[in-house]
Length: 264
Image 1 (cartoon, rainbow, N blue to C red):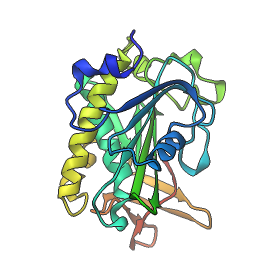
Image 2 (image 1 turned 30 degrees about the vertical axis):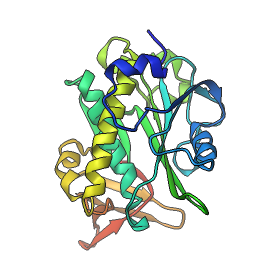
Image 3 (image 1 turned 90 degrees about the vertical axis):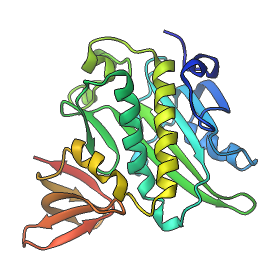
Image 4 (image 1 turned 60 degrees about the vertical axis):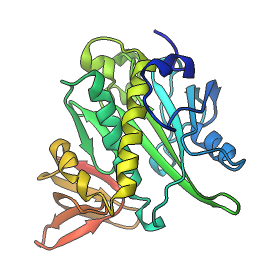
């Protein structure tokens, strides 16, 4: 299978900016960190950094991300969105939708579920992680980096024992390895389309029906763990700003903006 280099993704790439400027690395500490460093030199929106492996890959809440070489996709995009800063938390959910759509372009029958706030799951196991970071540069303004790790061609034995029952990959789910270059191009095509639509909208409302069609939490009894408290109730779906709507045990409703989610 060809490596996900710019030359190899071009035959399928239909974007205007996403991936048109690409840096491919065999091994770096973190693709997010590298994008932020280049953003500070004035790089344009759409800059893509792809790494075959990362020595300091991170998920949400500073967790490490399992990054075996030459198997999966680890990449980060530079965005310069023209939206109020209050809308930035919507981006992680939007990117999850675009990532899912890109995978389905090649594997249309795969039962990919969405787990708030931005995880993709198949058959009760996680296949991807998304980390969005932003900073205000004194010269170039708002800079957002979207980092995505997607398990593509891992077998079950490739995962460490502690992940084998909670993580999966597209190869495990589909039964065959995928062309990572083709897959990356389809993902970029969808991410750009969703990103452009999102900037023309006022919130996530136009995307909520699609999220709801794949939501694995809605209607389930869930527990949200936050740094200072734990919240238990029934997931009701998403609010237009991306927060999770919950019905609590005392029958009141609340909106949750962050936290780790466990469900039954």
